[in-house]
Amino acid sequence: MNAFTTSDGLYIAYRRSGTGPALVLLHGFIADGRVWRTQIDDFSRDFDVIAWDAPGCGQSCDTPEDFSMQDYARCLLALLDEAGVEAPHLLGLSWGGTLALEFHRLFPEHVRSIIIADSYAGWTGSLGAKDAQARLDRCLRESQLPAADWVPQWVPGAFSPGAPQEVLDELASIMWDFHPVGFRAMSRALHPDFSEALSGISVPALLIWGADDARSPLTCGEKMRDRINGSRLVVIPDAGHAPTMEQPARFNAEVRTFLLQQ
Image (cartoon, rainbow, N blue to C red; front, side, top):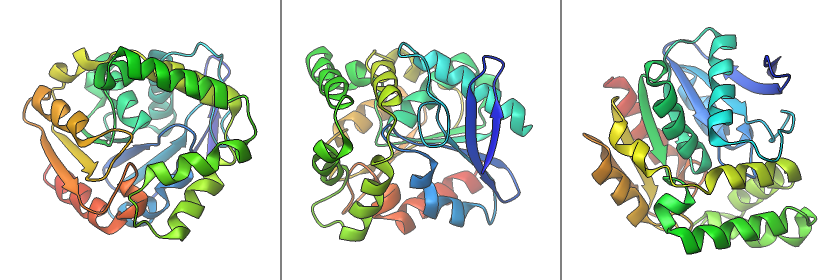
C-alpha cells in the first residue's frame, strides 16, 4: 500500500501495480480499493493500475463533512501528481463514476478516456429530487448506526439474485470497515445533479451496466449514453450494481477491449 499527504493535509492511501498506460480505478461509497481485487490482478499485466482509497474510506483519512465532489476531484488530481501520471484512463464504479464525470469537467486535459459503470449523474441528476433526497436521508441516518444494523440489508442490493455467497461476503467484509464521516460526506457529495457534465465529455467513453442493477437501473445508463457524444453502453447479464465483483471476467474483457482501442 502506498500513501501520501495532500497540501491540505489529507492522508490518501492507494494501491499501485503493473506497468504500461495508467488506469485509475475509482470505487463506490461504503467501500475502498479492495473492491477492485480482480481488476488489479488482471489489468496490471498491461497497465499501470492505481486504485485509491478515496478520502473517508479504507486506510485514507476522513474529510470534513461538507466535502464536495469538486473537493474529491482535487484530491484525485493530487494523487495523479504524486504518481507522476498526466492523463490516465479513468474507470469509475457507482460513486466513482460520478467522480470521474466531475473530474473530467474540471480537468479534461488529465483524462485519456473514461469508463463509467453502474453510476449516476448525481442522485438528483439520474433519479430525480425526491428519490435523491430519500437516499441521502437514509445514508445520513444509517451512518450513525453500527455496521451490523444495516450492512446485511445493503449487500444483497449490490448484486443479482443469483450472486454467489462468497461474493456477498467479500463486499460485506469491506463495507464493515466503513468510516461514518466518510459515508456521510460521500453521500452529500453524490446528491446534486451532475448531468450537465455529460455533454461536455470530450474523450472516448464506455458505459458498462449490470442488467439487474436495482440501485442505478439500466435506464440511468441509457440516459448517460444518449448525453455522452460517441459513447457506447454494454450490458452485462446476471449482474447487479457491482458487475466488477459478480461477473469480473466479462467486465474485465469489455474494459480491456475498450482500452486497447485507445
